[in-house]
Image (cartoon, rainbow, N blue to C red; front, side):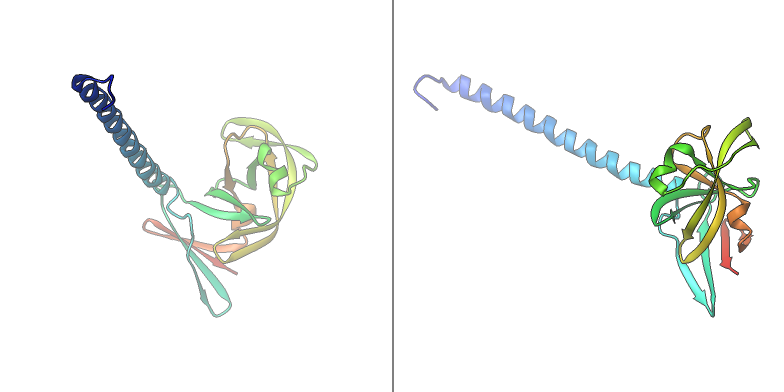
Length: 178
């Protein structure tokens, strides 16, 4: 305590500092809880962030867990760049949001009209040199760059899925290289 401070002023300063320390502790606690719940939510949306591969002879098998909405979402690679796929057996080709094309090394090609769940749309055809899910690697996969898709999720259509054998068992989807 300095000469000019009274015991009451010192006690008031300590009380104010204690309140700020309590507010800071609550802020840190809430931040940590937010991170924890964000991670849990992300795992519910994509339970396959690191798909496990198993090799039997020359065949590679990857098992995917269904997410909380009943979809198969998995992390993978396009031209060695990390992406998130949603498997879609109703899609003819792999469909990539146009905005992701340059970062994935995809060049837009011939424009074509396609019928999507959201209506008719003009897309740019492209070819994926290398697409990977776990240990399964697919080459020269036809795809299109879709200007109507927002976000970063890629629809993994039949142009990729026809190159693997797949079977659903309960809440798991098994992909096998051919």
